[in-house]
Length: 301
Length: 301
Image 1 (spheres, chains in turn cyan, orange):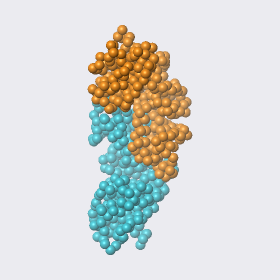
Image 2 (cartoon, chains in turn purple, orange; image 1 turned 60 degrees about the vertical axis):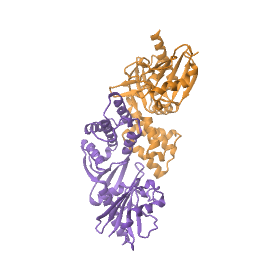
Image 3 (cartoon, one colour; image 1 turned 90 degrees about the vertical axis):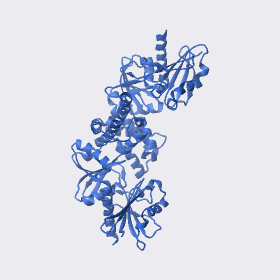
Image 4 (cartoon, one colour; image 1 turned 90 degrees about the horizontal axis):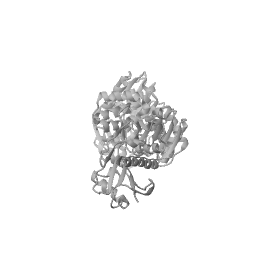
């Protein structure tokens, strides 16, 4: 029997979990009906298409959702909660629904105005999940991705955070720039990656020259596309590590994200003497949604 | 009467000048049949379409061409000349033609392997043009553009150069990244631009975070799109100046390029105490082609 439903509703994907009485996973479904492709009135039908069979008839089932579903362009806007805050206790909003079997709670993201304007939406739930399992954790969590987040955690709160557009830069440069003629679509050579990390850390300001050098070295010397891809990745992650040094220097770092990408960050950080541990992003999302569900239940009982 | 024809044949455009006995401009034509849209056998027809009327019937008219027309994917490849070299004395190649009224000489670009792999194709002719008019010049020439070039000039030679992908980064970020929702298509606010230059110069390593901050400040505070465009421009040019400091520090800088863009670089460099002068790109291209034409005529007489 479905006790509640967990949703991770991002820009390009909707993932749903049917949760049992002990917050155990009874079932799992995924659809490509991400927030980016939906108008506000299309969210409820898209959700029902995926989970209708899970809903008991005579009762209202709680649905807890995180991600871009709560953005201004999403189902309904869940305004950001300003840091410092406990990430599982951010503000929430109830989405308007027709079907009385549904009560959909959407989690807010986090925002910051000082020392720099910043936002996150979705990652706060992964952080909440990690802190639910490690309530005494004080340190830094890094969430590598399209927009990599670094978050200072203290006393169960996100104290401050900073976003780096590293993943998006990699994607733009490898797909749309002059480098697209030279860069492999797959593959990573560890030596080239590590050397590029060191290069970028020692000379971060020359990044725009390092990038063109990749193209020139292909034109002049016919460099292997996989080597050039590894260097591009190393330059961009190295640049980020150079800028994020105040976050990781002398800290224990928790990495939460896609395993291959986390492994790249781990390699780079370990080479700088940092201590790192990798956590699975999906597990952390589910743990975070569960923590919020428990809080909601506590509030309504 | 046409004495010779000057061509600037780039990726997206072909520009032709009909030159008189004193290297004076008799006529000028432009077409959109750039190298990027042509197969090797389409270059001669594309050229004749533009200049057929200029060609005397009974004689062969010299045509001197610079730019991507000489790339591997162009009309026929003019291999790079390695620096250090006098830019008006790089290698040239004669393009295969059917029409006996034409003798087309294509100029090579410049290449460098140490201290870093680098190439230019087209800019060397602008540098040659400036040096034809200023043969005693010793210093640095900067050619802002999609791929901005910095060149050390000494004893009439390009000694070394470095390319920064600044213009392409601006284009990718403003058109294809998450920033496209926030950035104006036009307009530049001087104060925002200058502040961003200073920010990037003092903290170049955090560029990927500064970029996301533009988006976050729009989401949280509804920043004006023209302000954000000015900041993006300032961050990227500031980052380049930080990396190119060995080129411009304590130097007199010549800027050659599109006037508005040169003005941005001039503003940024002057704020750092550098002395700059701007030269028109088209005039320098023509002066460079003329210098090469004189050399060719000298060789064949």
